[in-house]
Structures are given as structure tokens and as C-alpha cells.
Length: 216
Image (cartoon, rainbow, N blue to C red; front, side, top):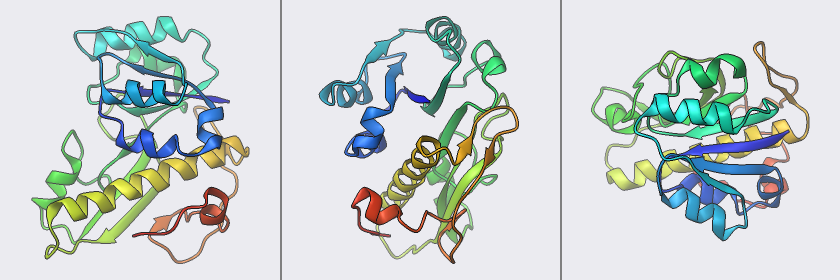
């Protein structure tokens, strides 16, 4: 299955993902409702882009539903407005988001900031299914790290950025290798568990496969 990235941000995570051939080769399109950095990153990697200018999430959802009438894609969303049932209802288990907090804590647009402003001892991210309830879909992969408040905020935010990058990259690998079956009752068929910040854990060959170092 091919991936469609739904974006409205600068695309920092997307840019890191596109460093890997497996992501570029399996991406069908990057789509947004506004001109944003993510579209530029896609163009720089010769990835198809679509700009569906919209006033709100409802209008964008309607346009997405019309534009991608073929339902046979997996959607990864870094979109800052709510998608609606115009788009989601017929794609249950095919739309996912990587949120910058350990859900169910700190839902919404400012997951990382709300984590810092809470009494949380951990920062993290959650790759989860997108449904009609805000940040409430089933979790696919989650990561948590101790929050060192002695560090500058930008350093802790970069740690969360890396967690989002690793989590999304692992999810893509699972899908491409057939270890993740999408759909309303989606399931993860295989993963290798070791004690780790991630649950389910990154595959044993994850770092070697992508030639990346573990920086967290």
C-alpha cells in the first residue's frame, strides 16, 4: 500500500522520513490545505503534491474524500485541524497521526507544551489511529522518556521530534513489510520486544536497516 501524508506544518519529521528510500518509494502524495514547508520538502524529493485550499477541516475533509476516492491508501496526518467523518468514516483503520505526548495525556494542538506545563515526569509521543474523537484512537506505537527539566526546552522538544521520527519510520516499515494489517480492526502482526523506550519496541534490525544512530 502507498502512503498519503496529510500536512499543514513545516514538515520537519517528513523531511527526515524522506531521507529513506523506502519512504520515498512508497509515498503516493503529500497533500495540504495551505502552502507549507511540507509541500516544499516533498517537491524537493520529487514526490507528488496536492494543494487543496480550504477554510477549515470540514472543507478540507470533503476535498480529501473527493480527491482520494480510491480508498486503498494509508494516511499519515501531521494536520493541525480536525478531520471529519466526510473523510474518516470510510477509512477506519487507515488514517494515523503521531502526536507529541504520551496519550491519553495532553491531547490537542500543544501536546508537548502541555506536557511541560503539567507535573509529568515523562515526555513522549504516540502514533495512533485518527477517529472523530480528538487524539483518542487506538495506539499503534508509543514512546516515553524521562523529562529532564534541567535541559533547555528546545533540547527536550528535539527528543520528542526524534521519537516522532523513529515511531513513524517504524510504522512505515511495518506496513511495507506486511507486518501491519490496516482496517477497522487493524492489527500489528509481528514486532520484537526488548526493554526499550518504545512499546511495541523498534524492530531488532531497525537501526541497521535505516542506517541511523540511536540518539535519544
